Figure 1 (cartoon, rainbow, N blue to C red):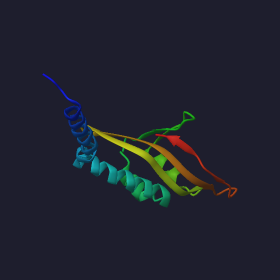
Figure 2 (figure 1 turned 180 degrees about the horizontal axis):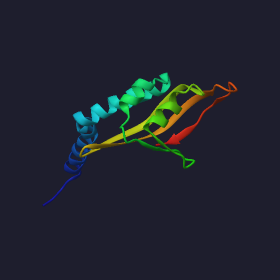
Figure 3 (figure 1 turned 90 degrees about the horizontal axis):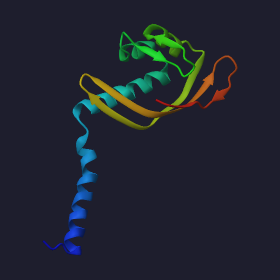
Figure 4 (figure 1 turned 90 degrees about the vertical axis):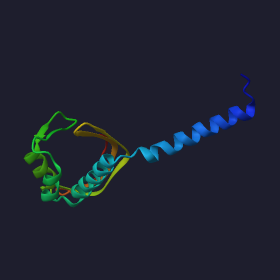
Length: 129
């Protein structure tokens, strides 16, 4: 079988076009639902809304800080909304969502601007979650 440059170029173009179109088609209804919940969580963090955060967190939440401190749901919600600090902005950059059975894995680069209430100083913590 002989393959000429034109056939090779057309097949390469077709595969490239399919590869570019596939991610847009690959977003499942479950991934879309998770993305909406993640956005609701981000907005609840900025608003420091304990009711909204509590509704979005699993009852058996175990939140581990980079310092090694671990919080349960009640402690996490209390500390996130106690007014000791205020988020001025939060961005979840380059998020990826993968639904695996009944669970979802969400990864992103977390970028925020925060103001500490005690001294009024602003800081820009960044974390990869």
